[in-house]
Structure formats: structure tokens, C-alpha cells
Length: 353
Image (cartoon, rainbow, N blue to C red; front, side, top):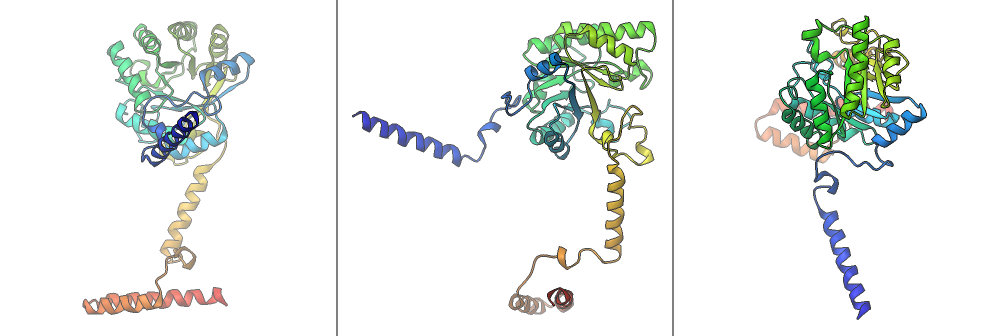
């Protein structure tokens, strides 16, 4: 009796497994929201806190699409930020303000498909969290559920932003703060201007960072502030600071993928690449060289050659094809096909000798 029951359970188990494998939709794509927090698969907030306690620098890179996310993943970067700077870097706007939530969600999903290891953080774009705490929470929920992010980032430290951050944290969503130069506030700041360069501004940077920590943020980005101000904020907080143009005394650093690779070589994009950015490569020059070479080879009928024309048609099928073209009254097309076949065969002869 017991043996029969075991055999029955075993058959049922195999049947369930078979049904699961036959599904067209992978099981892990059925539910939206943050990716697995298994530390063997994805960097977690716990791991970031451990690195911070040990004094180990945190690495973060901003990216906007699948290919860059794959590169970041392969490099073992800790955090991948899907920034609203996509408005400038990808879409060509002069500021970060125009990008919409729907556009940001497209970028988030693309990055989530490519980066399996880093903690994923998505920016809340301008105009999607300022009106009320309800709006802020609703937007943050969408970034996780529809964008596949693990956490969100919001800018600024005004009382309303602090309240929004607190409400989002209380909703069960991890929040990264952002102080110093906050690009979404250029209307008030009067442009992309560094902050913390006088006493009042420097104190405000530190106090704002502390207020965001009190609201429950797990980390704070410090952008374009003098190194002593960043050092003070980092010392005052018990959460990690991530610097961008803030000197070497933060808990970690972030740069934009395109900036650190030196992709924006054209003068039109000079304003997009900040002067604090170190270019670890000159990928833009390589891209320009490749495109010019491609243009030249196409112009001179050098590409595609035989090696890049891999698809063949058998001689018997070619004869039949020419015959059918002639029946259709397409004599010119038949002649073109025959001539091209003869030319390809002639091109093949030297390599076969």
C-alpha cells in the first residue's frame, strides 16, 4: 500500500515537472517586482551594508539599455543605476527634465534583462513624485513592478522630498537619496551648478543627507560637492555615500557608462560629459573609426564580399529559379541573378585553389 502511494506521488511529481517545463512563460517572469535577493545571484542591501562597515568601496555605474547592463554585470559592478540622465545621454535633451515615467520604465526593463548580479536602482523622473506622497509611492511601485528594479532613487532634500522618501520606505521599497547638485532642480539652482561651496550650502548638504538617512534611505548620492563637504557627510552618516564629482572620501563612486568609456566624442556632446569624469577608454574613437571604414568599404563595393555572403542556392535550383523568372517575363531580373551567380562563383575560385 505504502509503495503504491509512493509510486503514485512520484508519477504526479513527474507530471507537474513536465507541465512546468512545457510552459511558454518562464516561471520567474510571471511576477513583477524586485529580482531575487539570493546573495549568490544578486547584490543585496545587506551585502552593501557589510562592504560599508568593512570600509570596502562600493562601485556603481549608470546605464540605460541591455548591452551596457550586460557589460556592467560581467564586470561585477555592485550597483547599476538606471538614471533619468538617459534624457540627456540617450535622448539628446539638454536637461533630465523631459523624460517620462513610461520612457524610464522601458530603460529599466532593458537593464533588468541584462544585469543579473548588481543591485538595480531606478530614478524617479521629474514630475512623478512631487505632488503628493501617494503619487510618490505609486510611481515607486511601478518602477519595481513594471521596471524590474530592486530600489528607487529620488532627488533633493526639501521637506516634501523627505516625506516622500519616508512614505516610499514605509511602503516596503528601498530608497537611495541624492543631494548636492540635483539636476531636476536646475530651475531653482540656475543651471548645473556645484553645491556646498560656501558655509550655508555646505552645512545644508550634510543636514539634507542626514535627513534622508532619518527618512530611511539606505544610501545617499553626493553630486558635485567639494571633497571636504563629502567627507563630512560621509562621516556624519551610518549609511553609504556614493560620490559623483564629490572627491575620493565617499563610501563609493558612480559614473555614467557612456562617460567613463569615452563614447561621447562629438563636440555636440561635450556638454553632456562632465569634467569630473575620468575616461577609462576612448570607445568613441573606435566607433568612429569603424563607421568610417564601413562607409568606405560599402562605397567601394568591398563589403559584403564572399565571406559575408554565406547563403547559397544550388545550381539546379538556380536554373529553375531563372526559368521561372523568364516565364514571368522578368528577363532582366533573370539576367541579373545569373550574372551575380557567375560573379560569386568567380570570386570563390581563388580561395578554393
